[in-house]
Image (cartoon, rainbow, N blue to C red; front, side, top):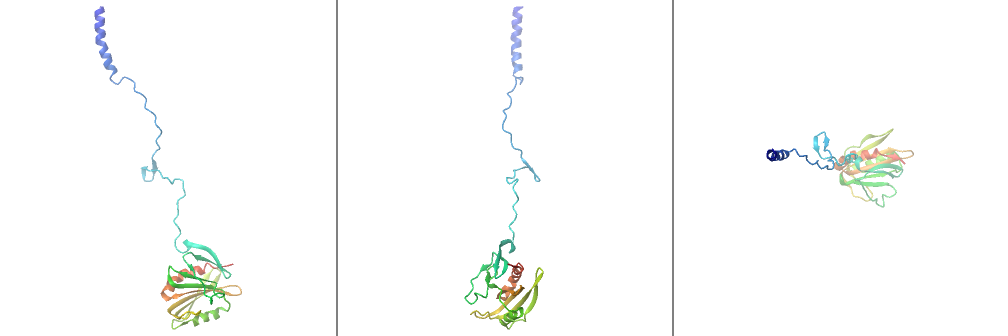
Length: 216
């Protein structure tokens, strides 16, 4: 009997050992790692990189055109204007000082184009006749109006051989666009002059500049 029990134990032991190798032994628990950030979900689908600018205000494009690069209101002889930064302030000659309040160039249009601002005395008709006397051999003067809010300014267009005075030689095929803004006690005068094709290109910008005029 004792020999039979030993014999059976020898048969059962290998069988039990084999059963323990068939995955019945418990496995070690997985090692916990730091949580992985979820992928962002956008309207384009899953898996895109998160937007590093999230929460930041969207950039707006810089404003274009002349009003996109303005320097602010500047005062000239009792009137304030919004001067485009692209314009270039030009020096006045000795003869112009005391008559002309400011002079600007428009280098993006042409080196020959310039505009002046003044608040000289005299009536509108007196000054327009003086402008007309500076031109000869061209088209007849043309008058128009420019809206200035509640007021209306007068536009005078001249073309031909231009004799500017102030010691300068005459210029052929030049034009002038003059604007007279009514003021209390006196008028304000702005003139755009230069070669006819260049004045035609610059006139729209010049008239917009005139419309920014505000009394001091």
